Length: 167
Image 1 (cartoon, rainbow, N blue to C red):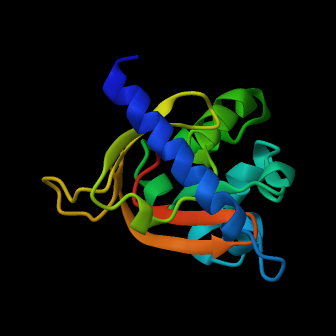
Image 2 (cartoon, one colour):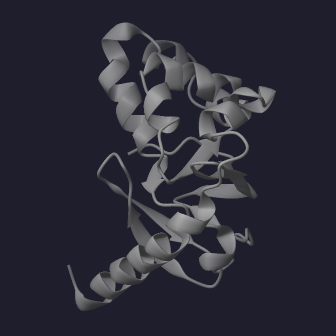
């Protein structure tokens, strides 16, 4: 890892540490409750249940979740979602879903103007770009646009994205 990536990783870790405590509240809904209450996340909720991740995402966290909408899942090649939901593909589904989760609670204002690689719960990194870049979106994660940011939960924050991230 070169010096620049180390500095970026340390900066992101600092952001996570500083907001982790203030992102949690005692009142309100957790990440799963919020997703389950929004019909645009019904495919995501089904996938989280099939992967056995409900208890984890209802846990204390904090987590930052990049949540793909039903339309994002529908844009995958035909039959992909159905195949991933089969019990024999649970490990692959879990890997994809945990690739959408970053430890800590990070809000969009903390990354605006920056670009960094961030390690996901799955173990791989995603590129978070808050510079606006050539696509004009305020924040991008890999090649997905954040379409709605900073949905606060008792155990973290949700950012809605328009594509499913694949590790």
